[in-house]
Image (cartoon, rainbow, N blue to C red; front, side):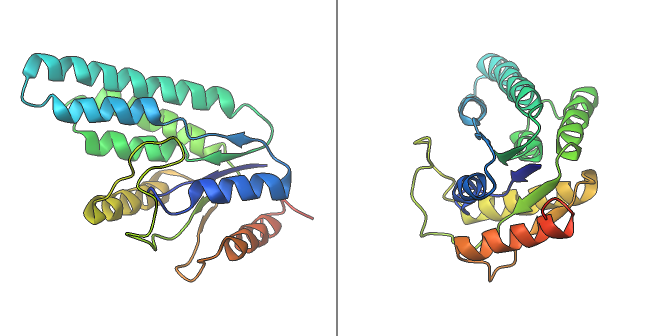
Length: 198
C-alpha cells in the first residue's frame, strides 16, 4: 500500500503521515524538501545579479532532480506513507520562474512527477484551514510560508495539477475534517473502498 499526503505547508501533513504510519504499520518516506527550498530561496535572492542568478538556476534544477531521484528510489518499497508527493515539487518548479522557455526540461520534470504519482495507491490532501495558528517553523526547523496568498496559490496549484495529470485515486479531505481522528477515519474508509483494507 502506497499512500502520499500532499498540500500546502502547515495543514497537518506530517502529523497525518506519522499517525497513518503507526495505524497501518507502514514505513514513512520523509519530506526531505530542505535542499530544494534552500536552492529556491537563493534563486529568489539573486535576481538582481544575472551571473549569480544563472548559477542559482542551475543549482535549483540540480536540487529538484536530486529530490526526484531520491523519491524514485524511496518509492520502490512495497508499502509506505509519504510526506509529500512529486506534484509538490512540480508546483514549486512552476512558480519558481526557472527556465520558463525550456519546454523540454519542463516536460521531463512533468513526466517524472506523473510516473511517481501514478505509482501510488492513494493521494490525500488535508484541507487548508488554518492561516495563522501554525508554528512558524516546520519539523525540520525551516520557516513556514506566512503569506496567505502564497498558501492559497500553492494549495490550489497542487490540487489542479493532481486533477489534470494524475490518475491515482485522490482523497480531498473536507474542511470539517479538523481533527486527526476524523482525518484518519476518512483515509481508512477510502482505503477500504479501494480494496486496500479488509
